[in-house]
Image (cartoon, helix red, strand yellow):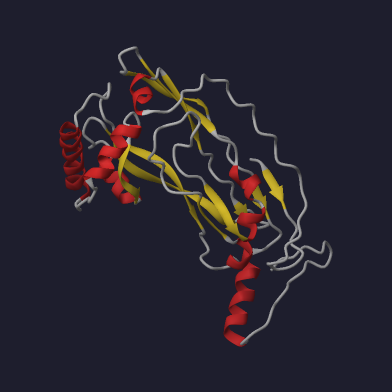
Length: 277
């Protein structure tokens, strides 16, 4: 596991740190560039899309996670290729899949016709997501019961297992944007990446981000999908190891909440000078 140790010298917003350099990005694979249009989507022989890497963990000095990823799933279906449906056929096909998903999930899914048609015209070769961030129970319920053409797409969700403890140090993260819905371009990301917005998540964003993988889809001369595979797996980001002790940090925060209207507590390891809380 790649690690990057930081030595906290003070509480945010001032954080000082040092450590090793992040690895240089791997050279990008050489692929023929496809100029994206509606027609090239139907005629293209291959696309190479980028897979965002799992974000690295942030842990305390004992390896206890402060920020980590949780595996979740999105429910999606795929349109048949070649992409030759008229608009009415697109909507009929999609509604059939959506109704099947509603029965399996036990809840309605409100998806506008305009959104369905835009996906088909711009990104019809890719799965169309109809339910996001399913719970573990929902994912388990669907496995083995999905009709043909439907799938569970694994995604990573950023979580903070200790709630607000050390939140002013860890910071938080968010998506770089919404799901793309325009014409597909080579080497665009399959879904938005997660980026640090504050604290250690932001300060060490480059090292936590990791390196993209590559996902290739190929078609025959008639526009039928012939294969899809991961040609380069994504490389997870570094694990950032702090000098914090989560137990002491939790005790310090609870002491301040219970006994002080305002104040600060700093706990230092006397021999090394490490900031423990």
